[in-house]
Length: 295
Image (cartoon, rainbow, N blue to C red; front, side, top):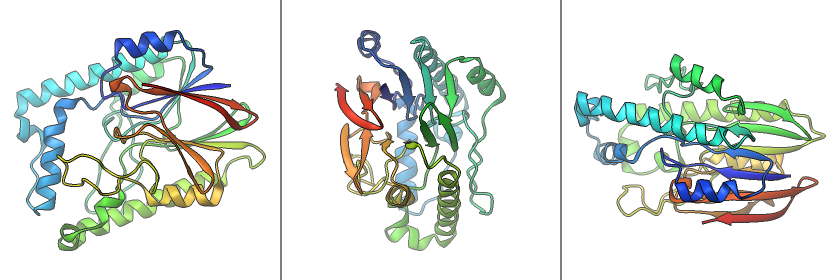
C-alpha cells in the first residue's frame, strides 16, 4: 500500500505539485492539517507573539486589520480551504485527515472546558455541510478508527507547544500558565484514552498536525520570538514511547521534510505542500518499504 502524506497548504495547492501527484501511484491520502490559514494572517500571528512576550494586551484580529479587511481575509481563507479540499477529493482516493491550527472554523476544539482562558473553536454549520459533501473524506480529528488492517488515530487542531511553557513571560502570567497546563492535561488524557480503545492485534498509524517533542520541532524562523525553541508536544512523545505506533505522520513545521525515529518509531514530516512538497510512503506488512519525498 502507498500513502500520499500531505499538509500545510495554507490555502495554496501549487499547480506543479498537483500535476506531479496526478502522475504518481498511491492508494490513500493522509492529510496532516493546515489546508487554510492564508499567509496574510501572519502579521497578526507575529504581533500576538511579540505582545505576549512583552506582557501586553492583545487586540483582536478584527481590530488589528480593521473590520472590512478582516472580513475580506476570512472569506479568502474559507475559499482557499474549499479549493484545496476539492482538489484533494478530485484524486478519487480515500482521504484520511486531521485539522491544523490554521483551520479555525472547521473543527471543534474539545479542551479548555475548565479554564478561564478558553479557546472556543467550533466548526461553522456551512463548513460542516461542505465537509460532508466530500465523498472521499474521513475525519480523524481527535478520533480513532479501524481501517483495513490498521488502527488509525488522529490528533490535530491547536496545541499549546512546549515553547509556551518556558521563559520570563509565562512566569508573569500564572493564569495563562494554568490554562495551558490544564489544556495539556486534558489533551494527554484524551489521546491516551484513544490508544486504549484500539485493536492491539493491528498496527497503529498515528496522524498528528504538530510534531512530537524531539523530532522536527525546533523553530527556525529569525522573525519569530520563538526562534530556536520547541514547537513539539511532550505528551505526543510520551504516547509514542508507550504505545509504539508503527508510523507517525506530522506537519506544522515548514522548516522540515524527512523521516526520523523516536524510540524506534519512524516519524515522517511530508513537508510544506504550499511550497510543492509531499511524501509517498510505501508500506509492506506494516513496515516502511520505501519513501519518496517530493520537493
